[in-house]
Length: 85
Image (cartoon, rainbow, N blue to C red):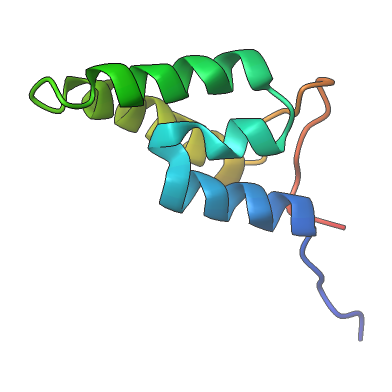
């Protein structure tokens, strides 16, 4: 019987998104640096104004989380990050 294995890139991306998604850590990890910097700046510069930045990047990271779980999230080169090895 074949043992199922998880792709470590997928698992790391999922965990970064889950715990540090509002700061764009998962996007830095997959080399989507431009949008990661945008997420980080939104969180840091507007996060203190009624938490507005965290609402924006929070929604963004939830969408990314859903894409990661459904194996539709791509890295900086356009390759899909899938959970299968």
